[in-house]
Amino acid sequence: MAGTSISVAQLNCSICLNLPTDPVALTCGHSYCVRCITGCWDQDDQKGVYSCPQCRQIFTPRPVLGKNTMLVKVEDNPRKRKIQAAQLDHCYGELGDVECDVCTGEKNKAIKSCLVCLNSYCQNHFECHEELHPGKRHKVTDVAGQLQKMICTKHDKLKEIFCRADQCCICYLCMLDEHKNHDTVSAGAERTEKQTQLGEIQRKFQKRIQERKKELEELRETVDTYKRSAQTAVEDSERIFTELIRSIERRRSEVTRLIRDQEKTEVSRAEEQLKRLEQELKSLRRRDIELEQLSHTDNHIHFLQSFQSLSVSPGSTDSPSIIFSSRLSFDDVGKSVSDLREKLEHFCREEMEKIHSKAKYIEIIPTPELKTRDEFLQYFFQFTVDSNTVHKNLHLSKGDRVITYTDTDQPYPDHPDRFDTLQQVLCRESVCGRSYWEVEWSGRVEITVSYKSISRKGHDDDDDDDEDKNEDHEEDDTNYDTCEFGRNDQSWCLFCSDSSYSFWHHNKGIKLPEVSSSSRIGVYVDHGAGTLSFYSVSDTMTLIHRVHTTFTQPLYPGFEIFDDSILKLCEISKY
Image 1 (spheres, helix red, strand yellow):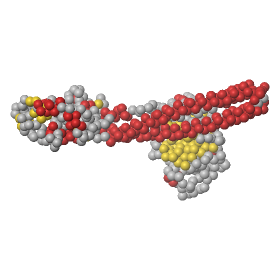
Image 2 (cartoon, rainbow, N blue to C red; image 1 turned 180 degrees about the vertical axis):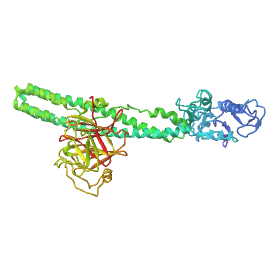
Image 3 (cartoon, rainbow, N blue to C red; image 1 turned 45 degrees about the vertical axis):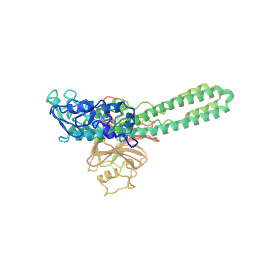
Image 4 (tube, rainbow, N blue to C red; image 1 turned 90 degrees about the vertical axis):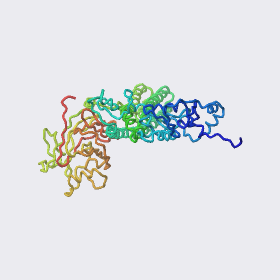
């Protein structure tokens, strides 16, 4: 007896590979679970020929199943638990894995799905499946999650067709029935088309991720600056009020509290925005991973059924971009406190009002960003061309609002403000506060804001043609004119052509994605906040590029017109 051992392979049902439940024996001697052999033979009812899945012995007619009394005793024996524990070769599925539909008890991880049997199988049961169907190969795919969703509930057929009219997956019988005369294609063909759309969606998500990352970094830096400025203001106030402790003790506490409260309020707002951006960035990354995984799946049905939900942004698609205020210093508060010290108690009440107004003006996140064209048009200004700055190869027409390149030199008189080597022009009026204007263009142009102090006289090189200038805008080099827009620290310009956009400042270029085919560009400047924004204007306002900086001089709109190009300063009748 010492050498006797239980053979798991001999006792197991060869269909489910587990110890038989309600075991029955065939006349050939092999035993199975009553449910397993019954289910197997039910599939052979139409043929009327039944066989043992293990030895292939044929039975005609279908035999009556008899209970295997020996295995019944084994099943009731406590040693059964030891036998089941010995089955170490099973690869059990983990959370998220598709489980084998045939396994009983603890399920194994499925590796294949049969689209005929509508079951998913582990390695062992898949081998049994292949042995049970040696003559006719069933259609088998890599394991598919939620297999039942791939089956038409009405006709119990595999969904292999996509109805474009109703945007759903259907079987071929549905195509002949309620979807008759609809625009239908194979699931594979629709997958190919949707795959292209998926790539575009991924690029949009990735662009948003980069935008949010940039905003996150800028906001963190802004908060640090704000905190440092607030701390400096508090320290200065403490020092000044200490000198006047007897007469202005109450005012000292009030100013300290004012600064702290304003700091707390603005930092709290900024931290909430940080949390929102971090959460949105996390959601966008997670969705990007899901989209990447979906783009590589081989299962068309799973792809199409997941495509709709994954195409929708997990966060708000119109969440406002963050504009960072340049008003990050409490220096004005400190100045007011210094004045208060000099004027003593009888000026305290008057100066405290100034302190209140100065502190409340300091914001981390100012007024929400303008979105609609009507909102921008509140700040519209009709700029006019300064004829004293126009290059000789630029022709003005229609009230000096249309600027066209011409090979014929125009009879402009000499003037110290005129651009003599580059086909550039500035406007007469400067930007005041917040200003907005629009231009229409064709060909290749530069749309600029510039200080008036920009150089007007450059080197004259007859070998340089307009194509060379265009190439200059595609790379950063040292061969440039200091009077050329975007190639100095005096100007900021957007280069536009039919094939590309780029932004230039201080001889540093940034290639930009082409956001739309609109030939109308809107320019918005908030001089005090230090923001310059370019928009593509159509039915909506689409941001092309935005700059955050500090403007130290008045700004003037300007333009450079290349060969065979034209630009028009737009008039707005109602604004």
